[in-house]
Length: 211
Image (cartoon, rainbow, N blue to C red; front, side, top):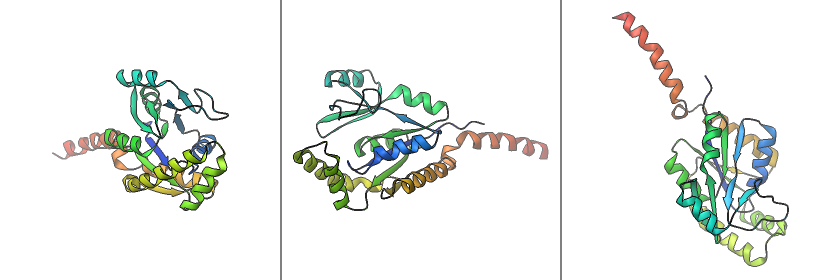
């Protein structure tokens, strides 16, 4: 029996390397599907519409909200981010484990609406390394970096809501650890309701035969 895919939320501080981790996971294993988020922020150098994000105007984003076309959405550093609903539902039904790379506000909304989702928080080994990575990207000025570090301090208060926390120090090890966690999570009874139902149906015939 083909198992329905599970919804995986991967979050982390800006600069934790979660985007690189997700790309490596998708390249190594074909059991995952990535949900591309919609955002009102401007593309960074090298980013393409429909690949990293769907880049839209604030007006367009608010129209999609009104049409109930998002699984979740949140405002982060003055920009909207959200998860388109249709793609997620199709991939889960096809048995794919769908990865949502979203920030903590959206992650908690997902957990409320989809209790069976798996939440994983990615972090560098320490705060100094986070600052070094943000500065090393060279994509934002000092003011934006300061905002991201201030936001990271706020986000650190919500880490306990996640199922797992994974340190991204060595990328290959991080990829393998996340994959092992997902594989184990697929076997948790709450995510195998259909299998449990079929087993119970099968066992009922023995009960009837014993009467």
